[in-house]
Length: 323
Image (cartoon, rainbow, N blue to C red; front, side, top):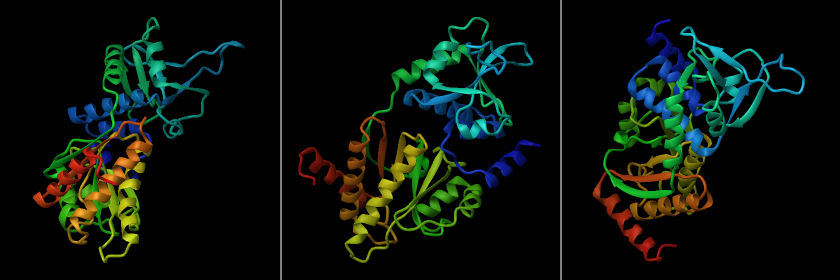
């Protein structure tokens, strides 16, 4: 199968799973570009930072009372340890005994093993990925140094240019593209985005769904549907749900940086000042409730009106006047 055929098959058959290593591995297998390699290593770094566990295959024929880990020898004669990044990745292969351990501890143990060259992630996948010991050391150091911090910032510019884990699309309920930021994101991401969106079955107001980012710098797109403004009080809750559910979905997929447009303030006519206030308060509330996670939120503005509204709100928040 050629790379283009693999990519097309992956696009039509797979949606982002909660396993960010497996997601990134699939894209790197389809296109072994430097950008996809960086995203794959970044996914490993995130799992290390979170202290997440992996499944480690063990030998079935170990002597009673002993635990032996499986190794795999490559064509070049180097011996590697192995690990599955999730149950989903494990189920791609033949059943075997596994134990669950934090990846950071496994990396540290591998570096102490004589004759082991590194680790192979998801050995049963169509394209296993191996990382050698020197890179294990660098990833450990990077995870310790760059643990994600909570932050909210305001930025004026084109959301499709941001290199973050996810950007949020202010979509319509069909998820099939439209005008404004929705159309801009579809154009920048490329036609694969529409093909994946066709399989999602739409999205109700206030809910959120996730796809890959395709040609965007961002790895993922979180699609949410804002309310069409008519002055009803319940629309405040619906707009707040757009931000809250997008953040919850980002956490579920181990994402630590997310950029929001000013949802519903365009064609859906939500008053800018009120929409900006709801966005800032909801994101602040979520970060306070998830203080140990580490999420960088960027509130993006495409025009000066939205930007000025956010700036005013930030000043009030700094002075303790925002409630």
